[in-house]
Image 1 (tube, each protein chain N blue to C red):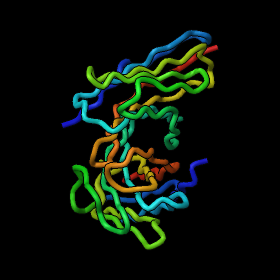
Image 2: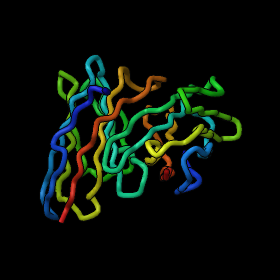
Image 3: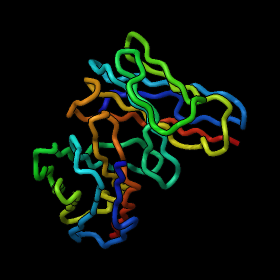
Image 4: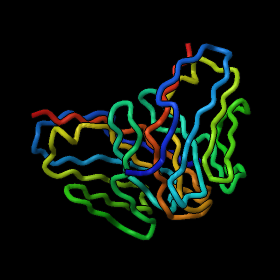
Length: 111
Length: 115
């Protein structure tokens, strides 16, 4: 059974810091891995999607890596800003087409 | 903007009642998935509909049921509501069914509170 874990559960940092959020999964048979952002009480916004054959994806200040063999992904946020404050969720997609989510990392960036 | 819409945005029900949540998928998408997100947790897969047929189900009891219509919009029905059903219900659409590498596009969710 696929399980997804995210560490840390919460993070509070001053503006400008570079951050690393971690995601691990137990079964390497995935189609892809996706990072989402969720603002309080809102839906999910897709940030980065990494296919199983890829090693990383970049979008602006965000970079996500995938190591399928070790069951790990990291989301790197450069030069964090207060507007980055949100919950970050990682999810893996299996051959059943469903997404399996971690419990998220709650990020607060203070000025 | 994702193009996936959900209604209503908020809903308050009492234990034992029934509720119907609605989702309109993004144009061109024929697959709809439903997720339940309890407070402080990640979303949990409820079920998926592909071309009007259920195409996979998570660990939810039969009182959670769904429909998909010819225009690919979808409903989630929950009977005999329990307090633990209080959650954010998310709908996601994607352009193809199982074994696809396409992403899913999420709607804003319906917040259900059961008293």
